[in-house]
Image (cartoon, rainbow, N blue to C red):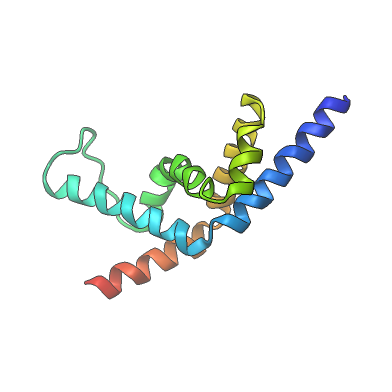
Length: 123
């Protein structure tokens, strides 16, 4: 039982470092890049599944998790995060990754609004 408590403390600490290292603006930027790549592929008929979405919120539901690895990589630009993340076990790293995924999902409304505003400004 002591190991589980320690693992939670480790992962909570690393997740806090993630939130300090990666801003919501950076998350929006990653989402924007992913959306632009999806939209470009759609316009060039290069999508495998030919999915269509009526709005960004629907697109977000299907693709937000695709940026989690990129966000972890971005957070690793912060030495403290990288060192502590790399010292976690694989299970602990997965726990942090899932916490990041939940964090991004919980910010959905704000992120979609920011992404929509950026798209409107670029049109």
